[in-house]
Image (cartoon, rainbow, N blue to C red; front, side):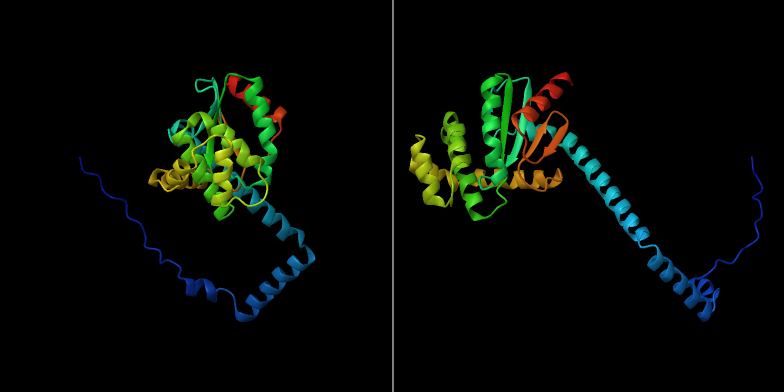
Amino acid sequence: LLFAAPAFAAVPAKTPADAASALSEGQSRAVEALVKQYILDHPEVIIESMQNYQIRQQIAEQEAATAALAASRDEIKNDASAPVAGNPKGDVTIVEFFDYRCAYCKRVLPSVRELLESDKNVRYVFKELPILGPDSVTASRAALAAWKIAPEKYFAFHTALMESRGELGEEQVLQIAEKVGLDRKKVKDGMAAPEVEKTIQRNLELAQKLRIQGTPAFIVGDALVPGAVDIEQLKDMVATARKG
């Protein structure tokens, strides 16, 4: 069947020039003056607008982080290159992004140790995120080398690095490695392994996808929790994850 197409009258589109000519020069200046005066009389309008924009930006960032968390779940929890402490078969996995020179990460360490000692069904994954300079990178390289060489000594080495004060150059890091029973030469050689660099790079890219702005940051279940937490917060996060 054929249908006759309805006829429409052609309506000329308005051009920017037409819109501009709708107001005279004098009228345009008057409108601008009114807008300017209104803003001067009501500056809270600008503040409110900025606040609304920031809120929209925060919501967008949270939504993007949530989507990235869902898409990267396996990489977050099950990367074989990521050191693990606690119960490897635990029913709840906590993932921590950290830096060995981060004061807040150091402050969290006692709570992490207490949790792992009190709850034998927690699996704890360490994501090395060296963002605070060359010493951070050196310490992370050594820790990842230790995980590959002697995984059973990783947590002791991690703890010793976190409890250290001052610089964490190569010599200081290797001395700490020796103190916890690691082979100094093997650690030094392992620090230069391409796999170590790849792991650090993957962690940096993953943190960027997850909108992680600093350390420490924790992932438990479906929740990403930025900033330092205490033992009670850690326990609450684990309990919530178990309920889910």
